[in-house]
Length: 249
Ligand code: LP5
Ligand code: MN
Image 1: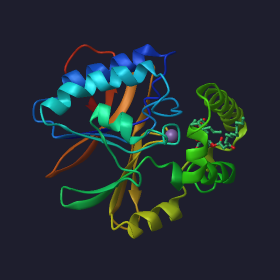
Image 2: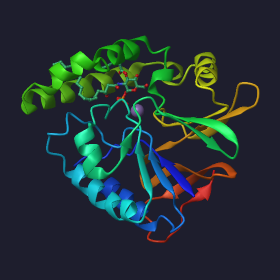
Image 3: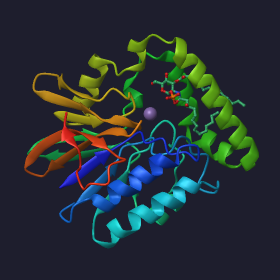
């Protein structure tokens, strides 16, 4: 059994989210083969050298899974694209900067965060081009922590202000571009997060686009599959003490 989650947005202000993540990790069944974290695990990440209480909690929660042979995979999101190999090693996660193509139930399936598909959002695309540039990142990571923190807070503030007045549709994926991208990557189906609009949609002629949900108010939407069974989106109550992995959407 395999699980994909995304958009927890872990932050010191919301310890309940980390508790929910730890609860999920503890309840993953013995036949769990892999856990895919498809971005925005953290509310923001300004470098592996920055103190981050949630990071400690993630490392602790993942350790027993790794110890029992669960593969741990991370695809960076627009909030935590600066997660580096040092943290990945501590968390025993493999980073997939460009997502990952898996064969699920015989169907090539692309797993990504999804932010790069929102091409109608010109402001975001311009921002993304800057911050995803390697030399910009090296320069940013070379700044004092306080400066990086101030820039991240400023960016968060600007983003929230802009999002409040942006037309909803431009903050979603662009359908035509997504179909082209999925085809270019040799996939039929797509599993992604980012938009916080959990649902499954038809994709191209014969594909399906599975959208994971963010973790908020005790609810998340995760994705579960086996090698020989199709992905299923499940609504998870991450505050519940039972061992359920949620109910199908
Ligand atoms: O993140 P969210 O959900 O609010 O909205 C995203 C897009 N915004 C972003 C920006 C991030 O929230 C910023 C925090 C990331 C911290 C990472 C490390 C530190 C980097 C420091 C950068 C200087 O991803 C938003 C989309 C939305 O998803 C839906 O897809 O619409 O995009 C925008 O809002 C575009 C804005 O124009 C970008 C705003 C950030 C501008 C920063 C300018 C520099 C500020 C620092 C100067 C001292
Ligand atoms: Mn995102």
